[in-house]
Amino acid sequence: MTKKHQNGRSKLNMKGPHRVAVLRNQMIHLIKFGSLKTTKARVKEVRRLIEKLVTIARKGYDFNTIRRLRKELPYDFSAVQKLIKEIAPQYLGREGGYTRIILLGKRASDTAPIARLEWV
Image 1 (cartoon, rainbow, N blue to C red):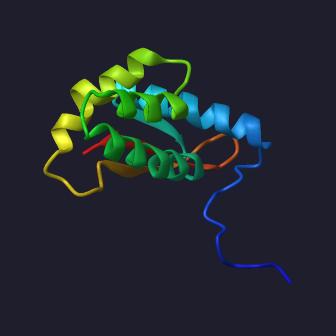
Image 2: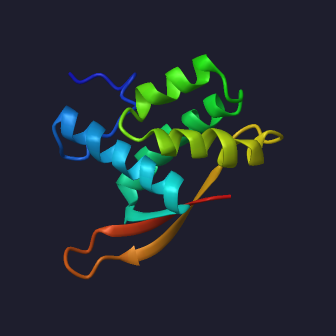
């Protein structure tokens, strides 16, 4: 019998390290360019992770904030700085829900559902 509790992560049909790398790159893309267009399942996972990062970044530019964000985005310090200095201050009065998902239909090649993730 399979357990139904504490299964919060989607595997996205990838091995663990590959999944982590893909999601990190997509979070960096969202931070740098303001929107991300990919499959609905990936968008939902990126949203789950990026909302946590924005909540951490709202604390401001200090050592622990940078350390915690660099743990999640280790290979792009410019994205961490942009998240702390430009994106997070916009959401200081907001308790969550920093992003929105817009469904774009299905991809022609394999009919995968496509969605766009953007800042609110």
